[in-house]
Length: 293
Ligand SMILES: [Zn+2]
Image (cartoon, rainbow, N blue to C red; front, top):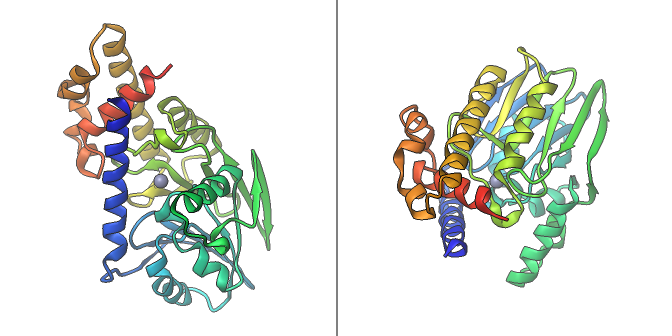
């Protein structure tokens, strides 16, 4: 039963992404974040761009049909080539443009589980796009020295998936969280790809220790953000954790917890359920993750 519910969330999410990718009326918006960093908003995960004197480094690439529009948007901030692409995790709304981007000579970097999951997904579908796989993989942390900037590419265990990484631009003081942070809304936690509620909360706690009040944050989804908002998001996650783990400990069943609006009501009212994960779906995700042995 539980598996079917996971599956239905995943299928709903996939069709949501597929639906978006087929819509060609997408505009790519460029949001300046710091001197050298921009955020690109289109469809799917937010893109981060570090613009150097000679090269551009890019974080995530949304869907394949958008690549040309994304490259056109990049041209408005730099005439230099995109040389490096960092994938924050394997989901298609963050890696869908990989094959197109590698045709332009980009080198792709990601956690090792991103490559494994992309490879497995291709084996399952029997659709082979070898150029879409990361060229370089890492396990815990990778440091980049890009002109004057120092970049930390940090893995967090079993949060949104089992291959998540955040990117921290030290001198620009900008953090791209990937899908380990959904600004102002409930997150999707992909339990079928090794994600977990505990890992997700732990990632937010660790990331908040790394940054300061001036850090600018590019979330995986939602608006450009900051430490104060990220802290409110963590408080929301901890609140749901307390409520739902207490409900499980008191012997409530899965159906009771999923149906019990009071468990998430406080944050439903603040609009956290207005994205593609509503109050009911987040209660299901928390129940499934916290009751898993
Ligand atoms: Zn994702």
